[in-house]
Length: 77
Image: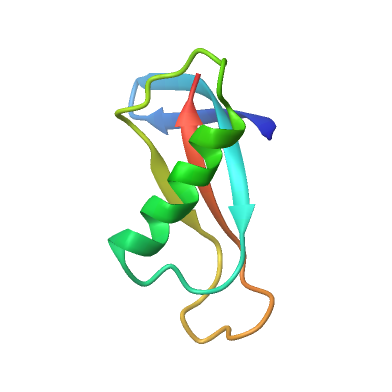
C-alpha cells in the first residue's frame, strides 16, 4: 500500500487528490482483471477511510510491451 499525490491541470483549474494504490504486472484486458486487483487493494486497506465506489485503473505501457508491464489501481483518499 502506497500513497501518491496527484495533480490534474485543466485550463484555469487544478484539482489535487491523494490516492492509495496497488501495482501489478501483466495485461489488464477485461473488467474482471481490473476488478480482481481492486478487490485485492480493498482487502489490503481494510480499516482505512476511502470511497469504495470510485477507483482508477492506470496503465503505463504500450500495448506492444509484453514483459515487465506496469499497471496500478488507485483509490482516492
